[in-house]
Amino acid sequence: MKICSRDQRLLIKKKGGAAREGGMAVRAAKQDMPLATLKTRVKKLVDKGMDRERAVEVALLRPIGPQGRPRRT
Image 1 (cartoon, helix red, strand yellow):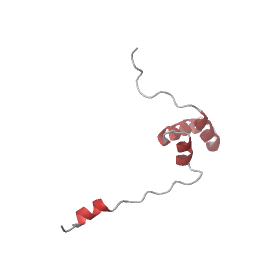
Image 2 (cartoon, helix red, strand yellow):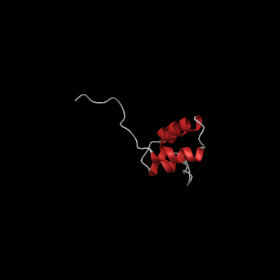
Image 3 (cartoon, helix red, strand yellow):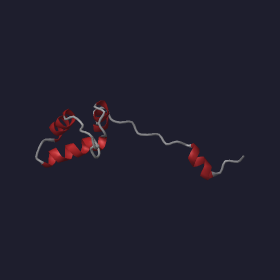
Image 4 (cartoon, helix red, strand yellow):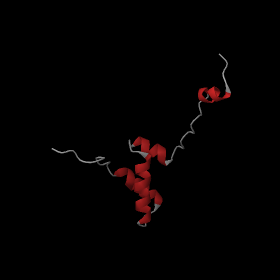
């Protein structure tokens, strides 16, 4: 079977970029926190006037709350 150009695109996988050592993605993964959650928390703290590095530290210290609607008991 001949491989066409459209089939070849499916066979070649793209390499993902490696995360920087001190980046937010690595720090979020260490805390088992989604990156979007960390970014949202940092943005809220920076908007309140906190320094960005301090905001990242504070955001990582806060525990992750339950997600979604609470269940009926």
